[in-house]
Image 1 (cartoon, rainbow, N blue to C red):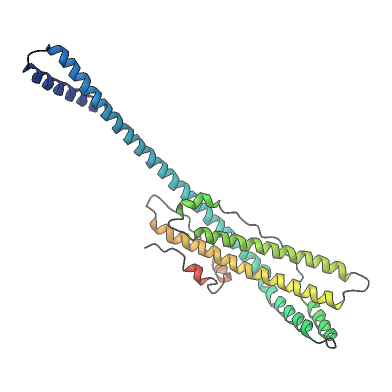
Image 2 (image 1 turned 180 degrees about the vertical axis):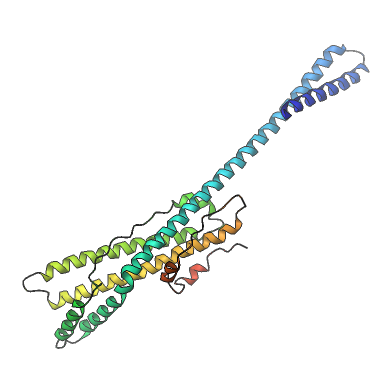
Length: 290
């Protein structure tokens, strides 16, 4: 309706301008009025048509840009919501592994590592007794020789999907990358432990048992991979916590009709998280929005 009204107003303006133009020409009295009237209307109509075409094109481009920006914003929010879901699910998987195994595995691995290093550094005359002490200790271990199931990693969206938010949150992709890297390192350490346990079982079943060197080798390797598993589990949880904290801070910039998911950690999950900030320098890179 408003378009029709605009056109009628434009036609009226053209008619008024052409009439004024014809009245001006009458002062000269040398050219027929009807001819110049049509010429004036055509010229003015062409000019106004060209002007209105440019105006319509500009308005259309502006509308398209707004729509594209809106779609990009919605895509960013969708990617961030999926990132929050991924971070929460991965934290829960890590906490489950920690509560079920790692909290009990760490003290046993530390004790085995201590005795293995003492036996390795001892003089040859006292080494057999040290190795025997290590063997007796390992025979009492409950979790040290337990195999580890790989962590089911819930992959976050590709970095390109939330790259448009990097101007506001430059460290977010770094946090996600480090968290994923630590989870993959956890799975590598767990797989390495499982292979070592399998090799140990085969060699222990041999006729003459394990020589001293192999006892020390398996003890040190199993303890080292256990510590790597424990350490990277804590690292990954801390990085995912940085991701969640960054997105909670980013939510302060959103409009009323926008919103992000809020992942609330259960008390037992929160208690299993690292008690101290493992990467204070990285936390300083977390962008805070006022």
